[in-house]
Image 1 (spheres, rainbow, N blue to C red):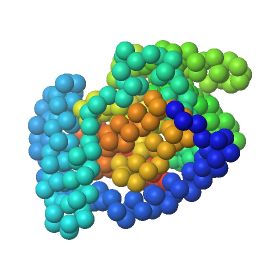
Image 2 (spheres, rainbow, N blue to C red):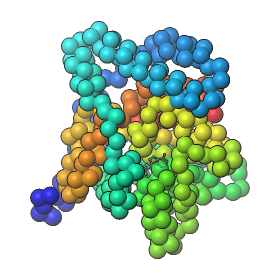
Image 3 (tube, protein in one colour):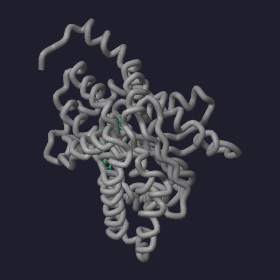
Image 4 (cartoon, helix red, strand yellow):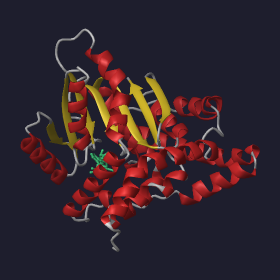
Length: 331
Ligand SMILES: C[S@@+](CC[C@H](N)C(=O)[O-])C[C@H]1O[C@@H](n2cnc3c(N)ncnc32)[C@H](O)[C@@H]1O
């Protein structure tokens, strides 16, 4: 890939956070996920889905219900778009056209592990560039503080799909600086990511543990064995049905709750995220980031999946600047 002079790419990288901020603001105006109001969600989807709930704890049933409900939500969104004017109709049509189920390299079992590792390292550099770890910590901090209140031991945090492991390290460091005692465990289903993160922990002399764990299979974890289960930038790796299973299982594993953060579904991010791959000179990252943007969930979809996954739980979904969506599920 053609190389940009280091000075130029450094300058562009330094401007990334501001560019992300500007594009996010544009995005809030142009991209509209509010075509369906919450009342529509309740009226049109949930009663039907919940009526069919008998036996929903069967994994296959839960998975199918979430898949069907999200399909229905997307169909209704397209149907309602025209009521909100030509611009909304065009944006929704473009957004639906962009949607894909193509796999990322990260999800391809035959893709070489060392190239997967290179991708998660580039993602780490992107995360640093946009100050993502501070943002993720600020999202978790209120929950960490309330879990820490009135207890003796540290707050036990399990990060699913931790990739490079760098947020797990940042979380331990930022929590210590904020006076919150935490015990952080990172996890991933790619053994090589876990091994590399363990080597980093040893080299840095940091007490962050890493385990090999498939987010679907938390059967080896006792209910409540962690306080908070967290997943960053990986919700889109799962189909709606798979995500419902991950949320339901995480809400069981977590004594306090599950928090998921992912990129906000938006057209504006197409101008930013792949650019990082160009600046950081990674074709594989560009490939995966383009697919990622086409797979992100809207906030209505995240809310629907969470409410199906944990029907009696507390669910909250909100946008987070500069370009994230946050879902919290407490069982
Ligand atoms: C886009 S990366 C995100 C890495 C890290 N959370 C971050 O924000 O930098 C997606 C990660 O999800 C992991 N992953 C995908 N499916 C998984 C599963 N079923 N269980 C555990 N990890 C999974 C991949 O191995 C990869 O490390």
